[in-house]
Image (tube, rainbow, N blue to C red; front, side, top):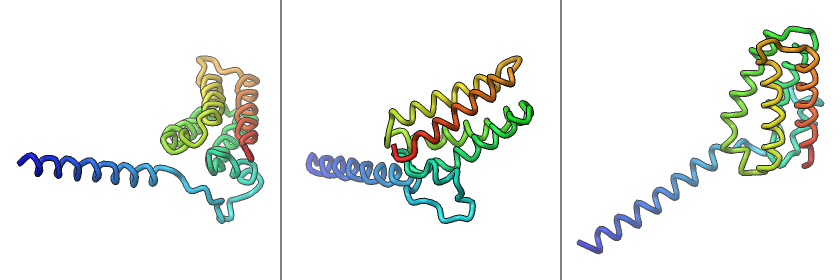
Length: 143
């Protein structure tokens, strides 16, 4: 009976390790650059980072910056929620790759969120925060 319990325990441990390995591998986005027609200059700027392809995040950030540039702060506030959701969803796959880089981007995103979600958002603060966020994304190229 003792041998059977030991064998079952080992099998359970090995199965858990295997399932966790599969789940971890699936949570990371591919490092290969996208061949879609949407890959323009913004994609090239951040696809070579240690974190992988950040172009989808940068594209949303550029949308938000454009809205802020045109003083459409309610729309920018709504759009940055998409960036926040996508960033938070990808954290488990991105952060282990380069935690320091992830934290740089995360802090910059938090600053942009704070500026846009202020009770009385200031246009110049929002624009500056978005410029800083785009620079943070761009600084990851080849990092």
